[in-house]
Image (tube, one colour):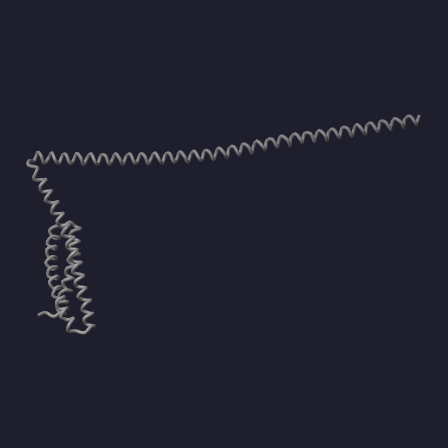
Length: 232
């Protein structure tokens, strides 16, 4: 009769083999290799049944060990036995999920075969293919049309955005032009005021000069005339 240590070693080896097989099984399923995944699934289920058998034997041996060994050794083997049982349950759940997916794929394959069997002649098959091609072509045409509409909408949105930016730039240029014109208008009025003031100043200066000359001439004539009268 195998010892508890021997059974535990066999269980650990089976767990490692099944986990490697599950990784290969998931890879084959992802690549769509149906035959390989099916054969691997059968192999993994066989090893799972063997692991479950070993797990039951380990639990039986551990119950005997509980009575015979000390508490520290019992606790150690309790953790090991619980680990084996837990991993066995996890593997069982993973294989059941794969089996469910495999059953669904097989049902889909049967439906496909039945559908093809309903096509009893080449004419019907060609008609079915043509209908499928027509539907596929219409779908592709609709997708292309939708893509063109999306492109046109995007182009229209970009054009409207560009027009909006141009409108804002024109508004800014208009404001700047108005500011410039206002500034030029103020400068022109100032120049006209300055020019008028300069002309008035010139007239005052020239008028003052003429008045001064006339005044001096009048004084000279007045006092010069008196001197002549006295001399006579």
